Length: 389
Image (cartoon, rainbow, N blue to C red):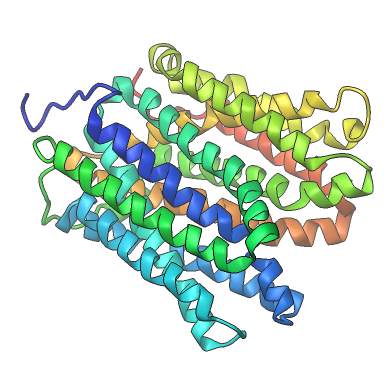
């Protein structure tokens, strides 16, 4: 096999180990969704908690373009390993943070920087190791790994805290990164013969942002991330007011999404990413728009199933489309920019949606967010997104 034509099987040891690392790293991050409880016990105010949680995401997003440059120059697996070292050191510091201050802020920033390095390196590695006709299959498996972590880690963390306290949570978070580091080291060994050669070229951010089809793909990506984040951040509050269960909604939605990701990747590759974006943006939009009407009532599973279908099909389609841009040695820059925009949607879904909820109420927020998802559909219908079908 040449170094310019790569076609790894999905069960290749490098990809299996990389997905194990995805599950472990995102489990580490998901455990810290519970960190606001610890901050509240320290006496931190709500606005302080918001900043300390948000600075992780800000550091991860703002550093991503630089991480793309580092991945291009030093290699994806080198960047992933370095990112996990930083995450490991940050995770080791949490047990010693007993009050809010500069030290805590620095740890949160370092945690976000390490996570950014892992994401930039790993998403670029998947883009480089699989050809266009198999990328939706590859990113579907990645999506299943991520969503499994996001679904399982928080309840596991709650159980740890309830039985042993936050010390056990921090120890678990540290252990997860240690195991992930070992998995990436193993993946790097298996991928050594096929990894993309390093590039001394400048990362093509300017040219990419001048490409109308890529720019519009980024807009769709931002909308997709924003819609998910809005539900993740505000559904529990709305469910409490409607005497409904957010837990059951997320269980159903993640179960559907993971089922789609594990079974439909090859179909998305064969039939075309744009086709499935056009088919399942409406499902995402309807899942959000129907929430106020069905929450706490008969048929409450319907919005969950629709939302899960949207997540399951749109995640691999967006990723695979983005990975199709640029030459092979430009994949680190392409995927760094793409993942930065995707993660920005999760920031806007927390901040901007909070403002909208204060203005329109929670039901109004879901109607507005569903309308935004329909704008994503319009973009997919009106503009070719550079798939090359």
